[in-house]
Length: 337
Image (cartoon, rainbow, N blue to C red):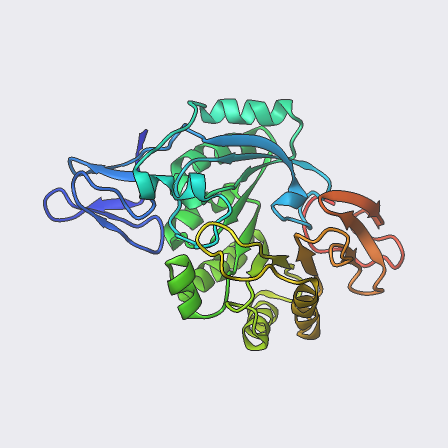
């Protein structure tokens, strides 16, 4: 446990948390929507500092980050809790537990121990993932700062609901982020995720402005966010406001948690989503959760030849030299080639 940052005391013992865009006003003895920031006698505490519920070595492609040290290992770390309540959360047992049953659990591991484990595992980066890194911000910040000193990169896998001030604070230590752009309607975000689209878009723009390498992911849920209009809107937002070089991952949905009435995403739907992105001018649109589809490969945006071939999380082909296509010499956008 550690005293929380980005909060201020209001009337009496009430505390306003400004870490994420929910802006919770928390009474004494209560917690924020995330379930892991608690007001104790007028002081807000992070209940999960130094208390990861999971840490593990993953391929960076699992995040997914395809233009960030491809083929490398990432040391993944998470605590319980989340500031979204997605009906289709794959990790609901750890993300929603504090909200649903009040339970906060994990293993005591200091930031220095996480960095040491990452070094021992020969990981190129530490990935703050599985749940939502914003809600364990203080822990992530302390790890990231020490990791930077040791020459390890840092990346977030995030829902993009962090407020401006904390993102600016951690930006000097944050190299990359995969941000979920879960849909493109306020209704979807309200009903399925418990959040607002506008806040996510503002955060995505700020990540880009701060020079953090970003890749976006949209889980395509049949009947919820798979319309031609919605997918086209996402692709146009990326192309016009972020840049055609920003990768977009369109991933297959499988029924889980509270969203059991939607069908799994078909290969045809995923291919259609990818084509929409390409038609809008995006250079890199990837199909996820369907290994072997062919939509996992990175093409050279100039000559069209495959510069990185993939099957699932494995690199099958690597045709880069000095960060550029070995066939035509055009550079590939990203970090760590």
